[in-house]
Image (cartoon, rainbow, N blue to C red; front, side, top):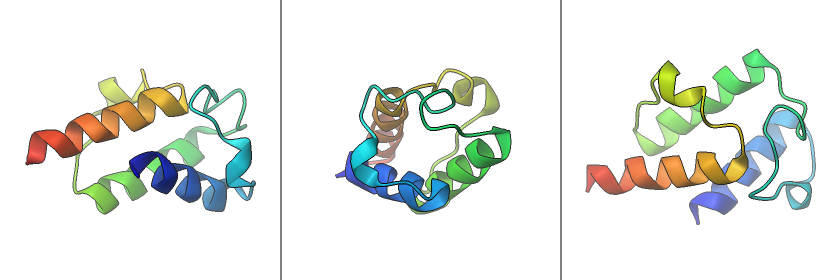
Length: 79
């Protein structure tokens, strides 16, 4: 579920088809995001899931899979 929500959010933000996004997609290289896109995406995820993504963690989130796993872990920690 979180995977689908994240891919939908990214697809809307980047104006691409959600089907083009996979867990292996590299956020910068494959999806052609820039630093502003990344910041906007992280802010949207923080707001949606009521989590905080520190800068040092964000640096390591280079694929959709890593991003999804990270968000799922943060959401689970809140329960």
